[in-house]
Length: 328
Image 1: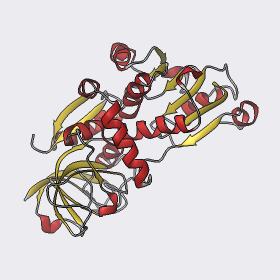
Image 2: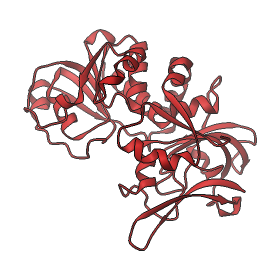
Image 3: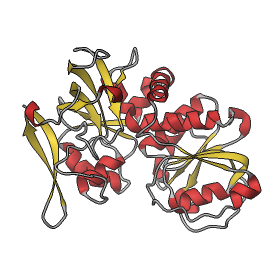
Image 4: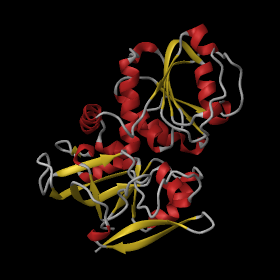
């Protein structure tokens, strides 16, 4: 028997979330059974738990888009009992039961061996948000953005993706500007590595199709008017890596930045990224993200606490990462 967050849909369509005790026989079929030691509370998990957005495709559902733990049973020769593994994406918590539970079943193709020197706690302190941030950094690098190119803007700077993106970029030698709606967090953002801070209000409303060229590149986790303004203020030949929709899914922009300044908008998908790219991202995170940065940027909660934390996260009242310890 093990605890799990359990989502059901009421007759009126509302999502009901509760902490339940399940047995392994309740789990869906899977090639690998993992004893989950740590998971996280992500923006998408909070949407699922509160029902504010229809991210869950079938009910009942155990949310949790990522987890880390130890293999207990495997029908695939690539994994054996005792192996430390991490999973994120592949529809976990949306179309298939996820990681906010004591156990999870999964396909072997979706698992990544935990990199040497990385604990399950560190992996989930980084989590999908940090992994996505690394994919964004890799995307900028692949498009030729070098540290000497000029300032790189990171939107949603106090969120999971934004905060780790700042830490990664600054340690690679980039000059980082953080966009946030919480100026009281300036000290924290500077500690992560931001050299400048802008108020998100300057980006979150409708703006001109072309604006002053400020950014050599950007990582955007916000979307909507913010992304449109980031594109409009990116320098000639600059690159914007887009990975989120905290403000909205819409993009009220024009083609002007693309055809007049040669700006590149590069989409970053963390859910279905190829296995080789995942391995690279996790290996780099293990090597390039200092533990003190992770600890300073993470709060630890128990599984049941996720129910009350979810609305706070959606309301922008949570800084950095939220680690869920199954033994807490």
